[in-house]
Length: 164
Image (cartoon, rainbow, N blue to C red):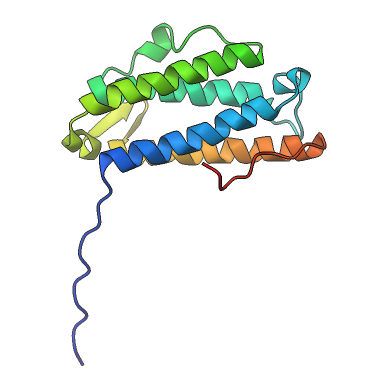
């Protein structure tokens, strides 16, 4: 019997990771746009929060999170976060777009080895930085799935999930 060949390690580049995350963020942005004005912050099912509140959670985590990754400072959320809680499409989209620009601006300042460092995100969740990012992406996908249910329940076609 022969021994199996060792599998070479596989790594994704940090730029690929940013593009992957921003692709998910672009799709979530389109989800926000798809909601009727009265439903974005006023519609829920089964005890879930309105999608606008979920979107604010996502933008808050991304905004403070990219700052924490870049600098090690996770305290901004406790101090001011990304801004006041929005109440309209325009307000949440403005925050979303500002956070997208912030991610793109801060990302090149993050040394590649930082993604393998252990840190305590938001002063609560200890983990390897790339693992924290994967969690944020998974969390966004989870909430976007809730948004798909809402849009379908409202009789609307959501954006195609594969178009990111």
